[in-house]
Image (cartoon, rainbow, N blue to C red):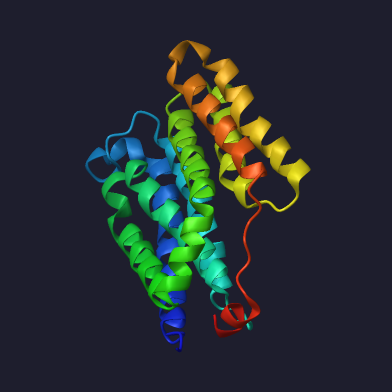
Amino acid sequence: MTTRTHLLPVAAMLGLIGGSLGVIAGVVQAAAGVHIPEWSGSKADPLALGALTVVLSGLSLFCATRLRGPRSLSSAGRVAVSVGMLVTGGLCFSTVGALWYLPGALLLAATALVLGSGHARETGQVFADNWLRGLLAALGGFELLMAVSAGEPAIVAVGVVGGLALLVAPWTPAVRLRVVLLLIGTLPFAALTWWSLVSPLLAVVAFVLGLVTLGRPRRHLSPQSTATG
C-alpha cells in the first residue's frame, strides 16, 4: 500500500491561500464590518469577531506550513493538521459571513485532500483513538463563539483565552500543562457568565471530558505506519 503524498503540496497551497484570505477577511470584518453588513453577516460585534477570525486563520496557516516540511507526516500528523484547518474552516462561517465563503471553501478542500492522502484504515484508527479529544476541542470552539458575543471586553478576552486553551489542551503531551489549560479553559469564563447557564454547563462537560482524556494517553501508530505516512 502506498500513500497519495502527491496531494499534500496541493493541500498546502490551498491551506496557505485560504488562511491568508481568512486573515484578510478578519481584518476587513474588524475594520469595516459595520459598514458592509451584507458581506460580513450583520454581526453585532464585528471587531471581536474579526480578531477571532484572524487568530483562527493563523492556526490554519500554521497547519498548512506543516504540510510543507521536509519530513513526511504520520497518519496522526495528518489528522492533527486536518482538524486544525477543519475547525477554522467551519467556525469562521459564523464570524465573518459571506467574507468567509472563499477562504472557508479552500480550507475545507485542503482538509479533504490531507485526509485523502493517507490510508483510510490508519486515519480512521487515529480518529477512533482521539475522538474524545476532538470533542473537547470542539467545545473550545463553541466557547470562542460564545465569548465574542459576550459584549464586555474583559469577558470577551477571558472567553477567547479559555476557548483557545480548550482547543490546545487535549493535544498537549505534558499532563500538568494539560490540567492547567483545562482549568483556564473552563473556570474563569463560566464564573464570569454563570447567569447564562449555557457556559457553566459547557464548562462542566469540558472539564469531565478533560479528566477522561487525562486517563487515555494518545496511542501511537507502529513505526511501519508512520514511516509510510
